Image 1 (cartoon, one colour):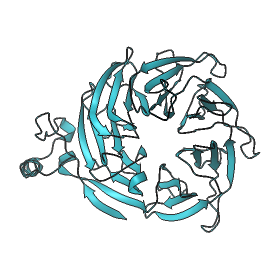
Image 2 (image 1 turned 60 degrees about the vertical axis):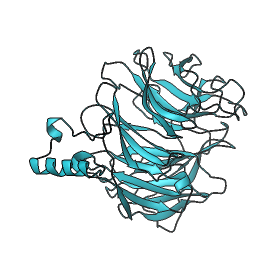
Image 3 (image 1 turned 30 degrees about the vertical axis):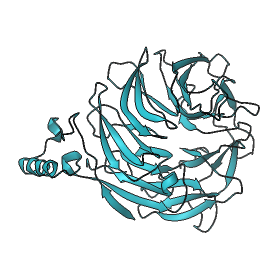
Image 4 (image 1 turned 120 degrees about the vertical axis):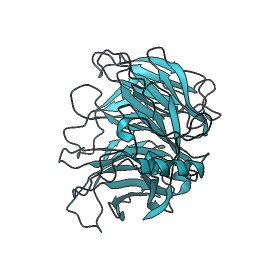
Length: 409
């Protein structure tokens, strides 16, 4: 199902649309005339005047999580999400829906994808906030559409799980899972944890759990990042705490990271603060923004205002967008394929979906994709297998799942 086509526009500080200058992106003379006429007419524009088409996958459900992968094994991207007490598969490219799990109490706030059982197909992981629960849904490609897929335990001892992230924590080349406790209760209160994939993920036992931040992540932490922030060759873990009136006084409003020890299975992780005085801090992703060979961090204040980045190694703060309200999601990718990392978010109070074009030196231009869309989760993924990165959104207050088709190719 397709919705209205939405266009984003690259603006200079004066508000005049700018054409792209890179040789590979220059339009032909006829396109240049079309571009100029569009500008003079006040129309939005993106790559050579083409809009990002908005495609609707699902409507009518308050959805806070979404992931995409080839779950059915047909070579096409599918989508999975958990909402209204059920985990649903939307089979691409026509997005036919199949309910694969309706286990009572499985209400996920966030999700991830990993091949848990090492059988060659991706499996869905869901995180319930409180009481804390992480579960995984085993993909059964041969199972009839009317049947549900098996569900297995990851962990039920970490409360307030708001973020899930897949990455290689211990450097062994295999995927691990990172999660957080965003609540000051339970045996792992206010902690950051990570898990090895078990050899036998079907036995109902909790996955091997390692605590990176034992009790030192207070203030209602949200999402997670993974990257080598200090250049020592080890993967460090990042998170952010929104603070606010429901947090213990003085505990939130920060972006931080945990420096990995030589053996990440020990308790030798060391906490560092990237920045304090960041009301509503939620999302952060380590990338080299300005191509200086040092890791930087792109971030959002999803329970506050703004998109920003911190320049490593001293974490100088730069503004990407100052006043988007509740940009409660973040994804990074090279959307224009010019060799640097761009970013995207969708702010649920502003109802704005946007992507931010990096000039390669950390100066970002805002492209508005949609002025009537909310979100709680966002992903950068090639949805249509055309070689560029599209944007997938879990619509939360918009009660939908949508994706925006990159017009680059």
